[in-house]
Length: 351
Ligand SMILES: *Cc1c(COP(=O)(O)O)cnc(C)c1O
Image (cartoon, rainbow, N blue to C red; front, side, top):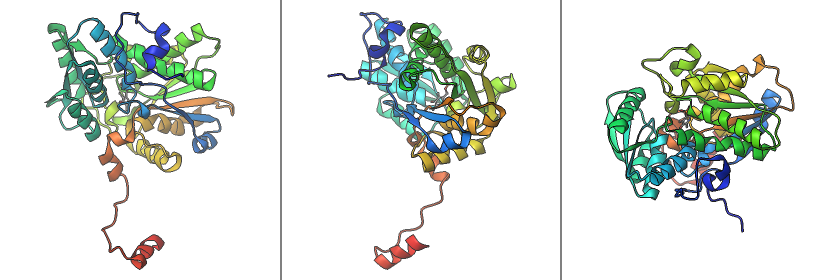
C-alpha cells in the first residue's frame, strides 16, 4: 500500500538530507491543485488554486518547518526560535512539539491573528510579545540565535526555502508540466524564492522544457519590493504579508528577473474582494494574505497577452480559519435569535 509520508520522504533526492537525518514530519505537503471555473472564465485561461491551507498546521510554512526541525535535531539542537506574524510560529510550535524540543517565539504585540496564536500556545511554545513590529522581532531573534545555542527557524534558515520549494514539484506533477504563470503573495519573499528554485530544479531533473513567469503581489501599505524602499510602518489587513523589509528581497528580485516575471501592489479592498469571492464562489476559505495571489491576477491580467491554453496557478498560502475575526467582520451580521416557530423561520427565509 502506498502512503504519503511527508515531503522529505517523497522528495529526498532534491533535499539536503541523508539516511542519518531523523525525519520529523506531520505528513505535510501533497496539497490539492483545484481548478477554478469562475476565475478561468473571467481571465480566459486555466486558473488553478494550490491550496496550501490544507497542510497540517494550515499554512505552507509546514513545508519548510519539517526540514528545518529535522536538520536542527540532526545537528543536536535542543531549542528553536523565530519571529513571526503567526503562521511560522504555529508551524514551529507543532513540529517542535513532535520533535520534543523547546521553542521560543517573538510576536509583534496586537498584530497576530487569533487562530495562529492559539496554535503556538496549545503546542507549548514560549510566547514573548514585544512592543514593536515584525521587522524588529526578526532583528532580535537573529541576535539571540547568534549568541546562544538556539536554532533560528525563520526563512533565512536555508532549510526553510529548501522544504518550501517542494510545492513547485507538486504543481509540475499535478499539471504534468510547469505552469505558464505562478502567482504568489510576497511578504518576506522566502516563498517566491523557494518556488522559483523548485521549478528550476524540477526542470533540470525531469522532462520539462518550460519555466513559469513568477508573478508576486504585495499589499499597498506593505510593498517595499514594488516601491524599492523599506517601509517603516507597514500596514495591511493581510497580516501574514505585513512586512517592511523582506529577508529574501534580493532573491525575490532575482526570481522576478530570471523568470521575466512581474510584481505589483494590490489594495486591501481588492484583497478582501478576492477573499470573499473565493469563499462564496469557489468554496475555498483562505487567509486575506493568500487571496492577494488571486486579487493580483484579477487586477492586472489585462496588461498581459494571456492565451486560452495558459495554465495559471495561484498559491493560496494559508487557511481562512486562522483569522476568524476577519471573516466575521467582513460579513453581514447574523440577526438576533428568534423563537423556534415555523412561521417565524419561514418569514426570515422569505425576507
Ligand atoms: C508567510 C506567509 C506569506 C508570505 O510568505 P513569504 O515567504 O514571507 O513571502 C503569505 N501568506 C501566508 C498565509 C503566510 O503565512
